[in-house]
Image (cartoon, one colour):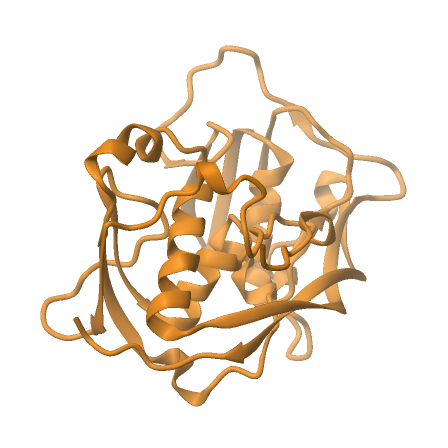
Length: 265
């Protein structure tokens, strides 16, 4: 069995290089990968009912197979020894056998069956050999301010407005005031705020260090960041009794030992 990437090293889940129980693995019955051409095949990081279809760069395909569950955190993954063509896009169309579809369709949110199947396909079609290497990396930490959190608890059972559905089940409503974006969160978890700040911070992930587990109603407003500041500071959180500060964490980098361009099929 090949070496597995330790989940404990990731603050966000990183799928193992080989599943702990081979009996539960599913491989694609049919796997097609071709250079992207013609009408756009939309990007997807989730399985379809019968397999997987997506237009991805090779780097993105590796992230689906080996990266954090949440694509928002992909930018935090350092990939070493990658070839220049890792940004080339491919159309992937894959199908699992009918007998495997009940398990495939009931796989959890971490999409472990998709990841294992895509790992096997990349190993077969691209001769991919990859391993993890311990590393330290910069992060941002969302922490409580000196006076503690100043968040309003959401009313239990309150009707939610129309807006962007959040992973927690809450809602975010977006408006513009005086040319600035305003984001109002309703019945949101702190992780919803962290996910949004991750989008703003680019390649530097944000980690929740607040210890807050409730549901909250709050608003954040866009400001003009200083030229030398990360965009995570575009939406200040100090009025919520929170603070974003720099930090470091140990997490593995991915090292590509070998990869070949797939031949179309």
